Image (cartoon, rainbow, N blue to C red):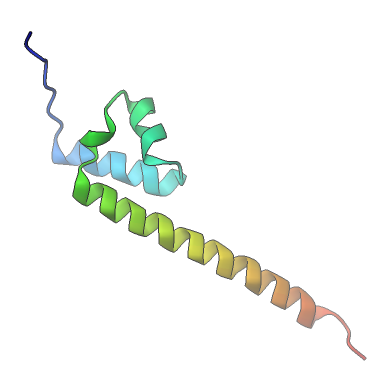
Length: 78
């Protein structure tokens, strides 16, 4: 039985990767929403996305820490 293999342009793949990055949603969820397989976001895209997701988590943690520090130093400590 022959399989229908769809091909996607580099622009489509880039847009899908940007959607994952911008929305902070998992790769699998975005792939389902676009009606494509996770494999469409190939290994290099997945590696790039994982790295960006890791960086985003770190930035969010740093941001929370800075908010707490600013709140602490804004208090009157007389």
